[in-house]
Image (cartoon, rainbow, N blue to C red; front, top):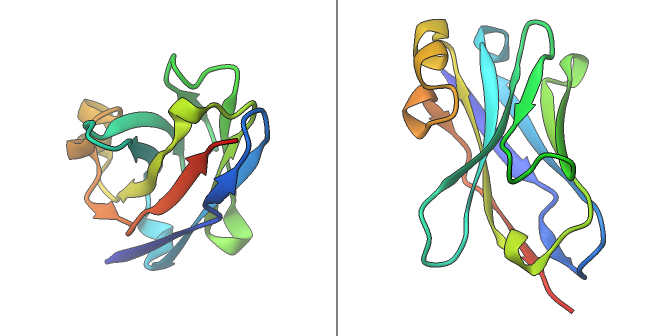
Amino acid sequence: QVHLGESGGGSVEPGNSLRLSCAASGRPLEIVAVAWFRQAPEKEREFVGYIFSSDGGAYVSNSAKGRFSISRDSARNTYYLHMTKLEPEDTAVYYCAATDSYDDWRSSATKEEGYNFWGQGTQLLVSS
């Protein structure tokens, strides 16, 4: 079992940067990949990006490319979503998710069904 806890959300003005954290506990060494999703008010949950646990290889969605990046601190079992040039449209609840199944991840790396562990989410509000 893997437990995830997000932190770092809050309220920021447009154009600013923010880093979200996702701390993994339980059996973090079993994690194959960690992804970030977000859900804006009255919208479906959206894939933001993922990072492959073993080598740190990361991928972000086209909508996030150029502004968002993902990294990890293996010693701390913590994963990060680095966000820059924030826009009001980035307002959402941000979730981190993890999987311990390579097959699930490989078949659904950019979809919710690719991940079987989820955090509670952290709220980000981008507003002036």
